[in-house]
View 1 (tube, rainbow, N blue to C red):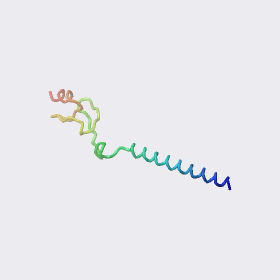
View 2: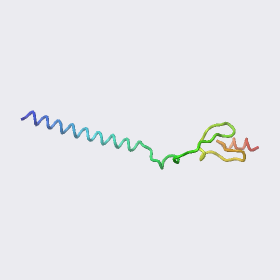
View 3: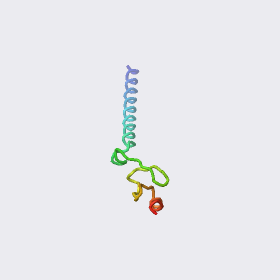
View 4: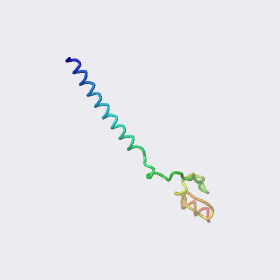
Length: 80
């Protein structure tokens, strides 16, 4: 009878330890997944700079008379 009681107690402690460990793991994965509102829109168009051909999101590109540019210097260089 004494061994059954000790075995039951060990099972309960193991079950509590494992459930708390799984709860912490679930909290970590939920916190590490970025929310969609924190990132760029669902579909981000990638464009190339007309001068240096560097690729960047369209929302970060600068518009000039002859295309899209990665910086103000490249826009000025191309428009002159």
